[in-house]
Image 1: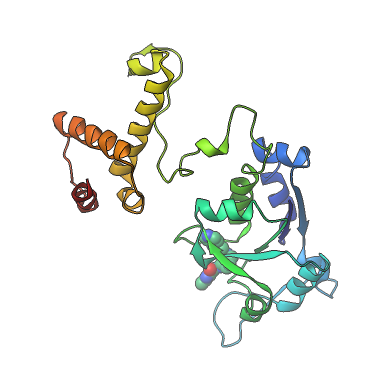
Image 2: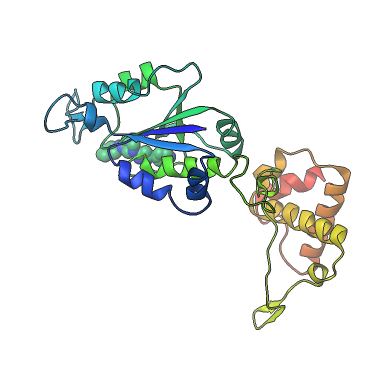
Length: 262
Ligand code: 9WO
C-alpha cells in the first residue's frame, strides 16, 4: 500500500510513523510512506502556503495552489483516495480503517491554521474525516493515527501469533481484561479460569468479559449488534453476577434499553 501525506511538517509525520509495529511495516515494505510539503510548491522564495481569509477575521487559510500542486506531483492514478482530516468530517470507525487497508493508494491532507480553502476540498478531496469532536492545531497527529490504525491491519504487519482479527472492536465489542505474571499480587489474584489450561473455558470467559465490558461501558455498541443465543446467555450471567455483587444495574439509561433486549 502507498500512503502519501501532504503536510508542512513532513519530519513530524515521518518520525511519528517510524516507531513500533507501524515503523516495522514500513521497514518491511508492507507499506510505503511519502510526505509532500506544499511549501515546495508555493511558487515563491518564502514558501508561502497560506493567506488571509476573505471576509476578514483572525488567522490564515491554506491556499489552493500549493496543495493542488503537491497532490498533482503524485502523478496520475485511477485508484487513489484523498482524505482531509478535519473536525468537520464524519467520524472514523474501525470499519473505515479496514476499508482503507484494502486500498492501493491513500493520500492524507493535513491542514494547519484555520483550515484549507473550501475550493481545494471541493475539487480534490474525496472524504473529510474526523477522529472525534475536538480541535487540534493541525491534521498531522490525526493523519498519524489513521496511518497507525490501518498499517497494523496490513497482512504481515503484526507478528505471527498476534492477529488483528482478535482486536477489540473487530467483533464489535470492547476487549476483555488481560493479566500477566505474577499470579498473586497485593492488588488481587488472576481469575482461576485463566490458569485452568482449558482453552474452551478461557475463550468463553473472555467472550463473556468482552460482552460485559461493552454492556457496562459502551451499551451503544451492543445495541447495534445481533447477539447469538450463547452471547445472550453469557451476558445475562454477567449481569446477574454484577447485580448479585451489589453493583447497580441500569444506572445508565442506555443499559436499561439493552436489558429490555435480553
Ligand atoms: C482553528 C481556529 C482558530 C481560530 C478560530 C477558529 C479555528 N478553527 C480552527 C481549526 O479548525 N483548524 C483546523 C486545524 C483546520 C484543519 C486542520 N486542523 C485540525 C484538524 N484540527 N483538528 C483536526 C482534527 C482532525 C481530525 N480529527 C479531529 C480533529
